[in-house]
Image (cartoon, rainbow, N blue to C red):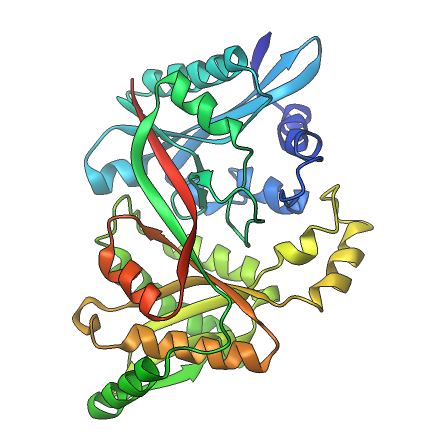
Length: 368
């Protein structure tokens, strides 16, 4: 067995390629476009690496790739939380505990040398990207920007000595309407408080992104593990998502001319990406574009309200907006989340809106 650091373009391509072969027989796994994965991993193209660094490793036996892992030091996290937590992500492995141990040990050694006292993950590469190990809900496919893994990954983690740091809950709804009582109540509150909703204006896309910058970090700042996104990171995310945005499914809540909340729902592009098993741009992108016309699934990616307006039914109003606009465009299923397991206000609110928990993702910790 050889655990080799990725030191050049050839090694990076080997790191990127492994999951496409490894998960080929998993009916739920969704291959992402390799060009997008390459951008995510690039220290030149991904602004995350302006405040972080990573080392990628590939495990080989007899010249055959059997696993991979990334060790990640996120200086922004450590500044915000005043700790020395290091991260691992992009973990993939055959069902071999010895090999998994070697991968985890290699990442731990790199993080320890960087002064970290805890290894946390999986985060690929951060809590603002794909994060968590799927521990419940293996029988259904992941939505856009959510991870998926086989059940034996849980055993590989637990036998190594990882323990749960936090669970993340994804909720689903198959209903075509919200409970009428909640709709009436939310609209009544909106009228009394002078709250209005509007859709994203694609003609003013850059200005709309600036509004999101002003709101995002305020709306999520108290969440466990939260790391503020920089302006460059939000710009980068907006650029990536712009081609798949449906303006009617992004809404802003306003009061007295001030934006107080926003919600972003996106078509679940994984439905289309599923039909391009190689993940290559050509000719696979033609299949993706063809199947993208038939997507009936949504993911409510973000929903945030300024702290002083929480508990005022603004979130219900925005959900109702997405529900109505989504149904009008033929979307019949939606996922919300993820939601922290110890955020009862959000979980109870989701249940009242007709959502039910259906997947659990786990963040693990291990002392170094």
